[in-house]
Length: 75
Image (tube, rainbow, N blue to C red; front, side, top):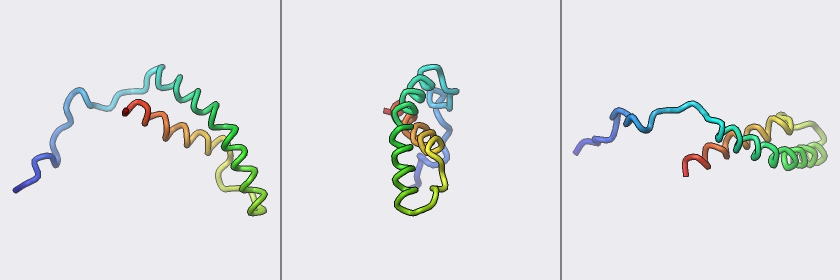
């Protein structure tokens, strides 16, 4: 039996949409909450390992917000 779901066109309602203002509002709130935790984690890693982490605290918070925000809209 063949897999009929492979290589099927994406339905019109599921096309990639440009982020809207609501997405950016959630992103900003999550980023604001993530920055203090990322800064704390960055300091702890720097003290434990004796060198600065590869990724700065703002970049880490930005990555976390970028990963979490789409999950909210998928639910």
